[in-house]
Image (cartoon, rainbow, N blue to C red; front, side, top):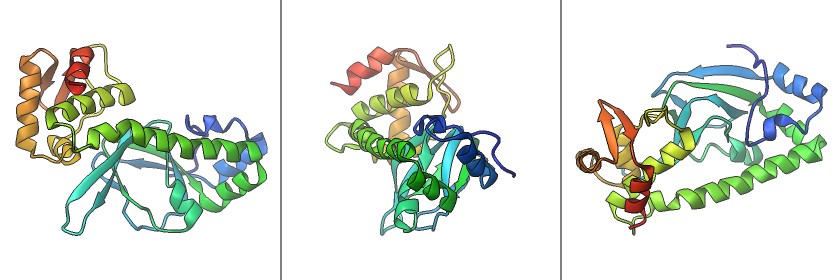
Length: 228
């Protein structure tokens, strides 16, 4: 661990609205953090004293209900920030964040960050734009979690969403690997049913699977299923 060497965040426009002096202060009080795949970044209700900027990798937001069932609410990746509401409200985190891959974070000190918001109107506007973007993202992903859609349609949407959000290599291999259990949690079904649906997609020539990897062969075909 140590200080971050640079400030990066697509959502905050790479901090371009801040002066060099303010950026240096943010860096001086920052912390660089590496979290391995599968590890918890922060837990639901945990007090947060930092803003987390994702420099590399991916994670998921989830909540646990009264009977211990996990509900995945959102996926995040490079350029996005976490911990916004907790910093503003002084309440604990509303969700748990778990790394879906090895993840690199730049953690910004709460007091320094809030001071930067207060003293820099342009930066405050950038931050407000992030909050608005979050609302739009939630609307975009709503169909994946919508129980009124069939699981087959929602799984197709989920694969297209992962492709668009995190990308793939030239062979269509999704950069982010979701466990079948995670997919089942998102879709509200069993891992066995997800495996059966993925086999159907594979037989239809829409995807290929190599162990835990998924290769998207026809984004258009998946979109047709998702919209059917």
